[in-house]
Length: 371
Image (cartoon, rainbow, N blue to C red):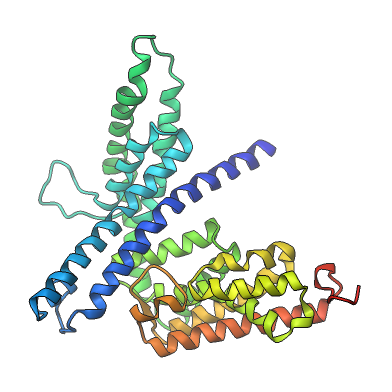
């Protein structure tokens, strides 16, 4: 049982390593693409690239097209970096080649002997699977005994060539296509979601975002929404962006409106949480959740669910893979985005204060000067 738990912990660490390296690429790409979109002419029936081509004056067109190209390049690197650094976490430097190739193929699956066949994408899920397979394949190759003349060539030639061939074949012909079909089915299902099913999805994503505040569950929801931006669907990232900032904002608000319920260090942490919430850093809630998880985590999940559902009902869209008030300038339906954040923040603050008041008795909550 202990060995199984240890393996799960290692797997969690591999995923978080890949995610931590990939997030700067998606943030950079998403914000630059969103900037281009914000200043591009809005012409019905035209994509972003065609709309930009109509922009005058020429210097503004050239500037935004350059910005768009940089953003697209950064976004395109997301999957290779994700797959590469998951493999790196499993097997070290020799895993990078196979992991990055697996991540690249995850976004560009096609039939090698049929150039006319359309490319499909297995998305972030494919990159995660590719990174793990690549890492474990390389790990197995590293254990093969080698002659002392061949040994120096193993990490720089033999292992990269063999592992890249294995992961390429697996992604193109075996593992990649079914994952791409699954992602396509999920995307189509999301696009068709209306009414109650959309609300259910928003509630689920909001709960996942707040559950571990930047951990693997949070990242699955985040990558799911960020990946759909690349597919042209921004209506999932809107609710997720509203949910991202409400745990720190709500807890920060709670320390402001009921100061005597918190210790001095918690009030200081609350001010820091407000700052982190404004820039979409969910981790600002961690000091509170770590001190009192059974009462704080359900409350922040409720707040994030409220924000996410409100944004979903109002069809809030977000062009940038990030959250919080800082991305307001690239959000569609800005007023309701702000309303959704306020709803989530107030629900979090009120629920955590109510729960603490009703349950009481926790040493961490003793007001100064009373104990």
